[in-house]
Image 1: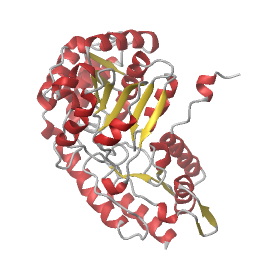
Image 2: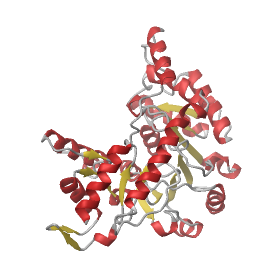
Image 3: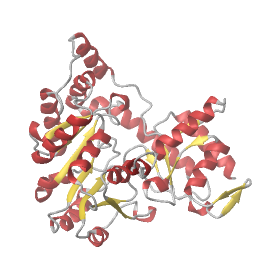
Image 4: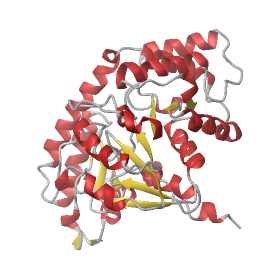
Length: 392
């Protein structure tokens, strides 16, 4: 019999939809996949060259659990350069992807019965990881009308004596929303009143940004000592499969994450770590071409989706997703299919239009679906054309 732990854990909705799409592809069906948050670019050459050099230099032994010393120095310099954050190497832990970084933090901070606040929409794994840590997730809702942002009043109302952690993600997956410095400082004023509440700031999409300056909540001096900044190289550097994430955190939290990781995976891949030194040390201009392309695709997909009746849209300022409200279709019968919710709608698009998206229910917003535009323009055009035809 399986453990209660695994039985209580939902499957990842994004990975489940990708698996369903692959299954249909094996049946010879032409599926356009807009479900995964994976850049369709190749890893930049200068990063691949660093990895090749690492192989030649015989990096093949176990790496330190918390990462190579020179990589941690490079990450500290990145934090100073890009975020105005002063972390020392002893405050940095390198992990097998930002997902492991987040899991480490939850496992070392949360006790059974603790509450985790999740401003919605939130990345699907936040609530699942909180469940694994035997804590309770409290969702703070938002809507497309307020650009998927919560207010300081909502945050304060959600805090209870059991609240231990709040998770922010800006730029946001799935909505592309970015909290401005002013908005984060207003939320920070609330959090200053609750010194027992810790903050996890997931900044993995930091560089995929279309004009709103990125702001790290740890740069608010009163919050620095209880904020864990999470980042990685998967999204901005097209390194999803390299599996490198990292944290900057209070040293006692970093030490605990190191201890946890030492019993789960040990150190991250040695070659990927050497390549990551090149990535985090590079000027932002080296990846600007990818951001410019994502910006073009954002404008394209917004224009095309706006032509479909019933799709309510905001304009995402970062990441590579749109998160349309499709609730106008709920309660309707389309081509013999009953559409009661976002799950039904996403499955309908997959099975009838052969376009893979993800239900917004998995992200804490049951009115929406997530569509990734980390795909080429031809696929984006074809996918929206299929959706439009199906719904006409």
